[in-house]
Amino acid sequence: MPTPSLIIHGGAGSIPDAEVPDYINGCRLAAQAGWAVLQNGGPALEAVEAAVKVLEDDPTFDAGRGSHLNAAGYVEMDAIIVDGATLDNGAVAAVQRVQNPISLARLVMKRSKHSLLVGAGAEAFARLHGVPDWPEENLITSRELERWQKGQEAGEDYTQADFAHDTVGAVARDANGHLAAATSTGGTAHKLPGRVGDSPLIGSGAYADDESGAASATGWGESLMKIVISKAACDLIANGHPAQAAAEAVIKKLAERVNGLGGIIVVDARGNVGHAFNTPRMARAWVTPDGQIVTEC
Ligand code: ASP
Image (cartoon, rainbow, N blue to C red; front, side, top):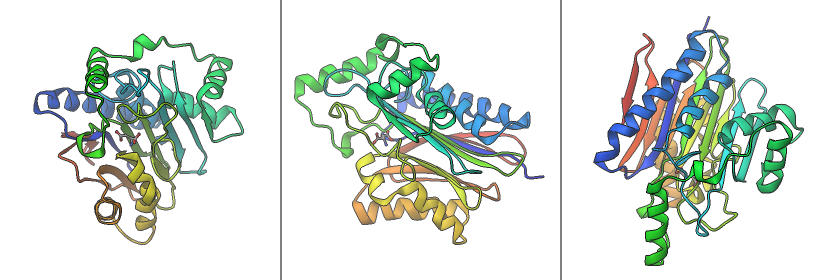
């Protein structure tokens, strides 16, 4: 029987030294939540959702509570979940007033005949399926409000160079050998209303296929989607790269081909985990074969 594997991330970027402990702590709690599911024999899909929910509820990260505000001063979130057993996937984009966009993405996968719902349509679908209206003020932190106000005063136009990437994600293999991936984000600070990045796009923000691997990406979405980074990593695994080599190769390509900044976490079908980034830091946690949680940032 395959042993379970799990790796999660809390975003790649220039995380200030003073904030590293919060990132480490948040990643550890998320890994614990996902690992508890896997240890009880639960499916990879449930494990990645559980881990990402913890990160969405933690205001440290740019997902759910703590999301960056867009240029107009409100939160629009994107999320995707992918089932490696069936290649089924569900995603939401530019969605407002939802506590856990990753769970809404899973509902889209399970309860609709579509893969991606956006904006008002996604919110209407949420309400129809009993997902409560989550007040905007529950998603906005004082840190993000200040960031937005400073940006307004300075008339700032954020670029990938000065951008804090705190998107979250998880990939897992369960005891039945099934893989899954999940990614959730508030997107980039000061994005135009309606802007959607790589995160909810299948193959870019996440991908999973039991026959190769599973991946979740973070970074400047406009560059990540150009190389369809998560699918690219899984394709390399299918061609014989171990997880770590695949992660390194796609980050190299991101830099060389499109001058992009970002990071990726990967698990391969044999359960090896990999991670790579070309930003100053990437918060991450994974579980070793003997069940220990390792965190790095
Ligand atoms: N990739 C996300 C986006 O562009 C941002 C991030 O990873 O922090 O929306």
